[in-house]
Image (spheres, rainbow, N blue to C red):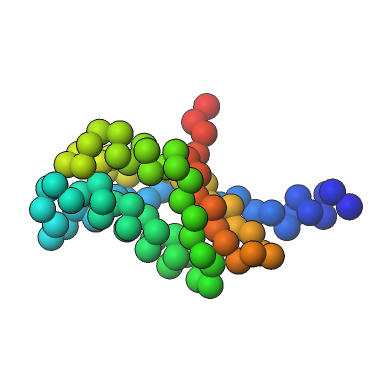
Length: 94
């Protein structure tokens, strides 16, 4: 029974290019726009899902301040079929 539940749970690793969020925005709004862009990017890939961003992802984007977010970020998206939600977490690097 447990094996079937594990098969249903699929984790998807994505690299999100946050540098696109910097376009046509003043430098003091780049991190704010990067978080919004991340949500839009995941929504495009998981249509019909409500996107929930883990605090660790938001803290990582904001860690260098508002004017200097990372250019790209690797995240793991865990969709939940029952609730129709997609949880976004940082990918653990080895």
